[in-house]
Image: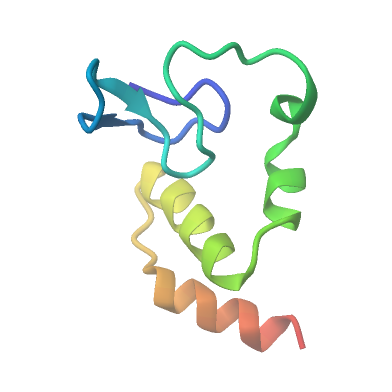
Length: 84
């Protein structure tokens, strides 16, 4: 199942009484509404608020969904090198 907020693949969180799908990328939990406030951010606005490691994970997930194999370490190294 895809996250309606960021489009990442959602994982089943079975640590609750009722298992729910949860997006570990943006924190969306199945059953919550997606309208209003912080949920209307674009991917670029979301990316702007992340540190290097979080940004590398976010970009790596997006590239992998398009069939491009890019590790988080490779992206983090590139980000550090090009943001000085």
